[in-house]
Figure 1 (cartoon, rainbow, N blue to C red):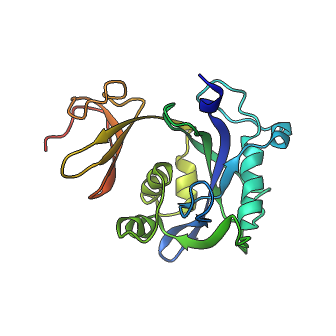
Figure 2: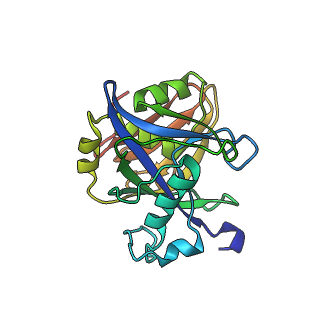
Length: 237
């Protein structure tokens, strides 16, 4: 693998709170002039050298020592949103890695954290230009309506979270990190887009959309996006 293709270690933290409408998550909009410009994201960024001094480690899918991700998540939450989650338990729930064909990609560990009481968000209006608390369902609807742009890991995380009634329930469901190492297939025709396959999908290697068997994939088509996961034979259309 060439140096340009070497994935960059990064950490993301989903800061969530309970509300009368259900779980809300903190979403930040990135400046349109930087990488992932204009996208709505969770707080996060690359692991800095100083973060590696942290003694806390996480279990990762690529065999590395897992150092620095926990510290990076806390630091990025402070830098991007002005929030201190130092004393908050971070639940490590996912490892996302885009395909090696991309010239710049991030190997990102995802954490879930319950927002501390009285949390006051303060963005710098530089790298981050807006922030909002959104329910997962509302955020997904805004994406569908074209009001906001998000990337695949954000979409799948929101889709997962909308199944829970409270942050405590979501945190309690985390039984370790899931690996989302991605293979991509482009789709043409009347409804073009992409399909992302993950380990455990019958077509993870073949990229065969019609193969029968377990599915673990995300469809990102012009008409709509959706997550599909089931362990057995493909459902009858």
